[in-house]
Length: 480
Image (cartoon, rainbow, N blue to C red):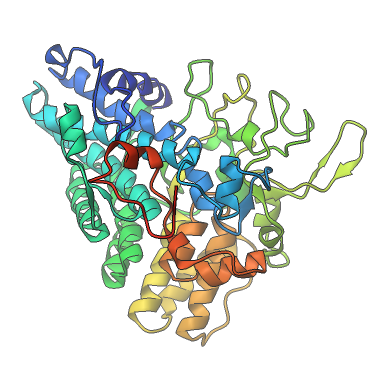
């Protein structure tokens, strides 16, 4: 799967242009009149949509910045100044921030790749069952990409077909979040029955029925439709495809990618082809030299905060599996500089070229979301909600939650459990935003009223406003 999907990031770069506006205006596209003719062509096009997930603007770099570094879980080494990482970390973002510019551009390039498949696949000569599966795959991918965009920026342009000209690009305007979510839900509902429960061989890692339903459950939680979230997440559980691994630390082994707990991962492949991940290097403490990262630089990014280190209960085995409290330097002295261990397994091929995947969805997340949905719909936890969260806690070698918790107390327990179970995996900031907890939690983290309501979404990249000032307006609270 890695070799089949990762290399096709190159194809999407050929089939899309270099325009800064949504990256939806091809300037030098490959000759598409002789492409998209058969199953092989369509698989290459579908793989291109997968490949964009690994780009810097999606899960290769921007995602962990907007989802983890933005939260109280992690920080970047550049604690001050106007560097993009520091701006995002400290809630001092300018509209020219390079991280959000990359996210907007690369995510829309991925959406273009999805739309291109959907616009051309009916004309290809191929098996109908495979055609349906490919449609399901790209609709899942398009939904995931729009979900990341709408949570990050709020209202965004909703582009559902291949954009072929500059004029078409300029006609795109931001639409209300509700409309974007409606399309995300429609895509996932259409995708789920078209997708298989699992794959074998080189197809392992593609979107599955469980992935579509699990993402749909997360979307319903985000929009506050708790009954639908409960029901669809129960379907994922009852499907019987996934289980919690016995050993929490085994989740992060490179050799254990796409394991039975994993529901969907972004695939990376080392080897000098430009498809490896950089987490091994980026997440090593900045001044650690070769003490942590044995090959290449130490980036000092996505580092655990003191709040994150203190969040684990005594006896929680996830702490030692998730982070190190420091490292031993070349002189043999211990340096107290915490860093995440979840993406440190394996040896890179070269600097920034490792095999570590990024897990987007896994079964523990589903169990915790299910417990949350029950708590909300039932006005308090049921035995089934307790069992879902306690299953996660048992693996961590922790005692079950006490019986008789109120709805509020159970919600707080879920918030805590999600923080420590899913630490460094790209959930914390969006969890805090969707539950209305971001402002109080983050201001307590900073010990100052740093975070405001307008910070629940990020600024629109200034480049988008510059090229389309009529259709693209800035989010309130941000100025150039």
